[in-house]
Image (cartoon, rainbow, N blue to C red; front, side):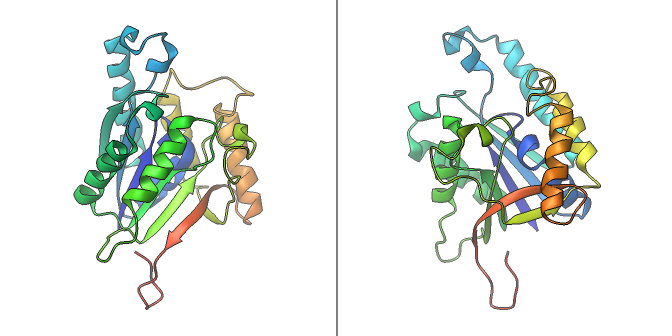
Length: 233
């Protein structure tokens, strides 16, 4: 199966579904990651003030994290960090549509639409549009994932709160996720921040307990199309 993970920022792909990417890759599935935003430029008063070397270093971290998780491909679109609301939605949709044409994924994972971060909301809407179920469409399953320090900090105020209804066992791949997050030196934070390694392990244990597992990543199923033989994708 071909799988596409769509993320707004470098590190969202790890925080949201890093353990799942590693688990899918270990089972022989072809996982591609597409990251829409350039990252870190929102930390400057003007986007142009961002150091090009720092951005390049961050993107290098994305490639290293993807390799640690076993992803086969990584694409970076370079949209302005935390400024997706300044980009025409159609332009974001077209980027995702191009990725879908190239990777032909039967399953797509994307950001939850009600997150605190504006880029996450735009990413979800653009993904939902790009994966609309047209005749002959390749995407049969669409899932939304939460991102630590964004999904929970919205407190369900911008859209329906994240509702986990699918759980992936990541007991065997949790430490790959933690290691991949550690690669993002500029994004990691010390405990008790939600992106701290201790917090990632605690969240995995929490969601695992909800599903009778030692560790799990949660997802919200947005849409699944059955082929009539009990299979999706």
